[in-house]
Amino acid sequence: MKKIVLFLISVLFFGALYAQESPQADTLGVKVYFRKGYSILEPAYRDNGARLDAFAAQLEALQRDTLIRVKRIRVAGTASPEGTAQLNERLAENRAKNIIAWFGERFSFPGISFDVHAEGIDWAGLAALVESSEMPYRDEVLNILYNTPEWVIRDGKVVDGRKRQLGMLRGGRAWWYMAEHFFPQLWSGGMHLSCEIERRILPQLQPEPEPAPEAELAEEPGCESVQTPDPVIGQTSAPEPAAEIAEQPAVSERTPFYMSLKTNLLYDAALVPNIGAEFYVGRGWSLGGNWMYAWWKSDKRHNYWRIYGGELDVRRYFGRRAAEKPLTGHHVGLYGQMLTYDFERGGKGCLGGKPGGTLWDKMSWGVGLEYGYALPIGRRLNLDFGIGIGYLGGEYWEYKPVDNHYVWQATKQRHWFGPTKAEVSLVWLIGSGNINQKGGKR
Image (tube, rainbow, N blue to C red; front, side, top):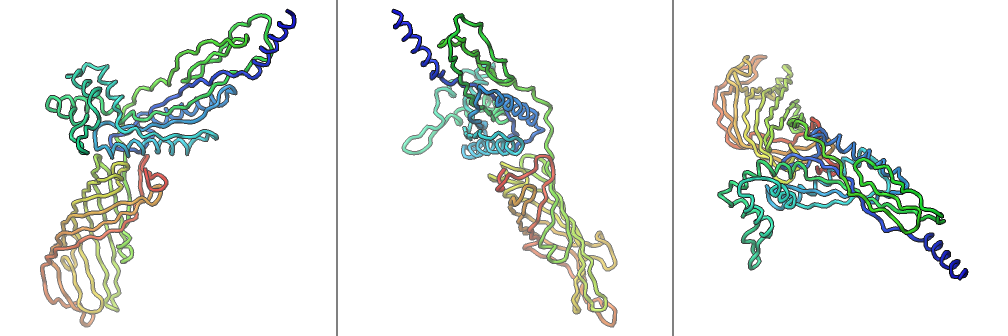
């Protein structure tokens, strides 16, 4: 009998030495908010920066715990049903990547990997919002969300879908209600970072003669509190439910400020110094203005190169890059010009405007349509290529230099239809968050 007891004690001792509890998964989460249709991360928008700082502080606290091993951080991007499926997928992916880029530039967590998940439209989030609401036609909306596929395909063609049925329901009234009350929560709260935590239980090498009282780990902020096992081998207490970081109340939203200063390198190469500014006013629209001034002359050689004037334009940005970052990508616009000039290279000269007058004295003027593309080349630098076609008109004088005098030859009216603007501008981006991601993507 004594030998049997000793054998059982040995089995228990060596079994405890190599035994290990199964890993338990905790989650630590934080939401990051974005503006509609954009993937740029604005730290000041809805207190994103403070929320991410708090997340990093809690992550550091977890790493100091010797019983916890942080494996990876999962970054999931989502979007609302607005927009095309391709655009929503790109938005979701770029939102996730931009969070990782912003987070990685400010914090260092060696050994932790980041997983990007582009989940596209957050249908589950929308269903949860509708479920907990008292919106009109609630049951009909839920029936579509739960029972209609995202795409209905017949003979290889898309013939219907969840989004279309929601848009058609009750003449669109249900859709517009959700667009006002629910969709902003999907594109504003589409990010969720979670760290998977592996908590391993160290074995008790020697059994105690009497059970010791339970010892609990101090609960860490924003993370599930998991109890340690009793000293008696094989007994563990049940973990408490996981708790995520309490979402901070939304702060008052401030309209972001995006602007740029630029110079047209083509004009600079022609010895015409110039400067321009552009202001983003939202929804892809911008207002801009440019000014140029050159007053070069050599009376002895009858050489004049004089021009000054300005331009005002309104632009509409569009395309993938424009959806990701203001003042970037394809753009079309309408512009108006006014200028005066005096060109003469030793022969017949041409003067636009009243001789001896100012810009406002019979200046030349023009209007036109432009197309261009703004390409990121640095963190706060773009190259903006553009061309404008329109009308340039106004009165001008022809003259000849004779015996140190300028003899008038004729007064004419200019009526020019064709290219009136060419642009290769170096653009400096100004404003909080008005930066390009590495590689030109944002």
